[in-house]
Amino acid sequence: MLELNSVTQQFRNNQKETVTALSDVSLKVQEGEFVSIVGPSGSGKSTLLFITGALLRPTKGEVYLMGEDIYAHPASYRAGLRLERIGFVFQTFNLIPYLNALDNVALPAVLTTGSRRKATEKAEELLRRFGLGHRLNHRVSELSVGERQRVAICRSVINEPALILADEPTGNLDPEMTHEVMNLFAELNRNGITVIIVTHEEAVASYAERVLHLRGGILQNGG
Amino acid sequence: MSLVNTLRLSLWLSWQELKGRKTVFFINIALLALLVAIPVTVDLMGRAREASVQRRLDYIGPSLSIVPVGITSFELATAQMKNRTLSLEVYNKIKRDLSALLRGIEPRLITNMPIEGKVYPVIGIDPATVYSYPLIRYSLGKDEALIGTVMAQKTGKSEGDIIRVGNRDFRVRGVIETTAAVEDIAVFITLSVLQEMTGREGEINEIRLFPESASSLERLRALLKSFSVPVEIIDSSRGEVAEMQVETTLRRYQNLLYAISFVLIAFCIAISTYINLEGRKKELSTIYTLGVTKGIIFHLIISRTVWIALMGALCGNLIALFVTMLQGHQIPVREIISFETLELTVFMTFLIGVGVSIPFSLYAVFRQNLVEYLS
Image (cartoon, rainbow over all chains, first blue to last red; front, side):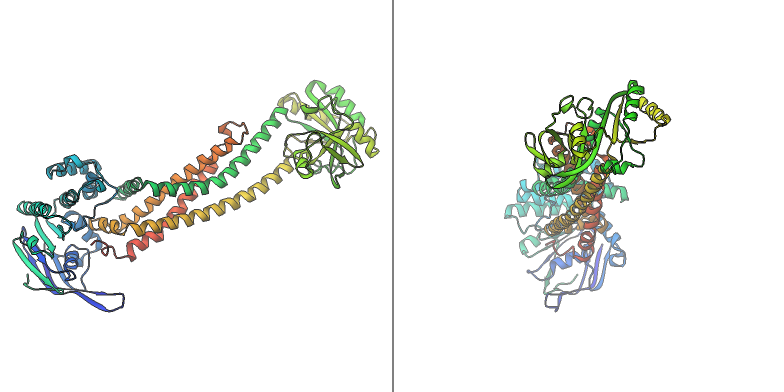
């Protein structure tokens, strides 16, 4: 499903020094797997996720998603991948503040179907399934933290992606909500979606089938 | 995604953003509306004034002027009569032969005299025959004068004041309404008094004719041409030269006002777009993550400006119309509304909005690291 080959990522900081965020990372994830990558802050977790999610071209190495070297294709191809094949969930939810819950979830579907009506119907069905049927027309600021994260998860799955990438999805949640959200990811995984979560908490990582450790940009127990 | 769907999505999403940030939206529109309203108000008020003058002239009716041979319409309009005169025979013949076609016939003597120290036109009119000024019909005393609006401004005189014409004082009977012609800067006194003051007893140099109707105007022209007496016939219904000068002056200022406004509009849109983009880095990064192409993000930023520009321009035009109507010109709205002005301001504001936001959009999409703000 997903294969990273000797991926290295380097940046220039403000002092024009080269910083290596990821060093020679190789990883294979099978279809339908639930993988978590654990590491402390600054270990390169988010960078790894962005590279995997076709958001950031690596300095060296290749990324294969469903057999295709995604960075060998133009930007429009990768945009299409993110729209139809990959779903993202972030620690700070990253919902659009001026849209209500329904429109936030529907947005990716509007982009694929071209029809707001169809997208909205699909979004409503999804939100009801996730217990948010009473929050459809509420703006983001009116939702609780747990509700926001569930809206973000709904948004990530509305186009039925093959892969979900979650960057510290429980970072802002209390233990009870963390448990709820992780169970949601587990349920999505049982329905056939490949899930990769990056987190700094071992407890959160333990929900996954396979746990990998990332430290100083190096993947410790290899993929 | 097709271009049409891209534009639809961009317009919808940018509209949602503006609705969600009502205060900022309102401030942007109010600012643009104000910048549009100022030049449009000046433009519409100028048009309202011209419509007002035109209405009055239409009410009075079209007129012809008979003047001595060699006097041009420009010279008549600027009261430069070169001491030429018309014979009383012409006046009597017109009165006798053409009265059935006329509502009124005014003999006049036009000259230039010192008034309060400077030289201005002085026009002698016969109160018994005057048609142009209902204010003094049949009664203008020998020591009384009428003054035009511009004369009133220049001399600071109004009804009841004393004005010195030549070496004689006259009491101002009233200020006549503007006709956008040389009469605005003239003083009117009784014909016989002016003839006496200038030593030109019995002389006139203009006969103003007021036909019964537009059709009788044409007959009148034809009949006058058949007179064997040599005269010049001038259509003096609009004071064209003076009006043209007024219009040219106004248009010069209007164009300058529009230019300044458009520059300020560009400046405001630039600042607004910059501030908006600075505050939306995370949101744009998120949209990019969802699979939106950079092209759509580009259109999204432009669409926001299009909304603000169009609504600002429309509101500005409405404000200008409202302010113009408050001036009490008593002109129907349909005569003041100018689609030219509306088209110009809406089109230019739209064009400026799009033009100014393009470099910001390009920078946001292609130079900034859209991933940087995700975490």
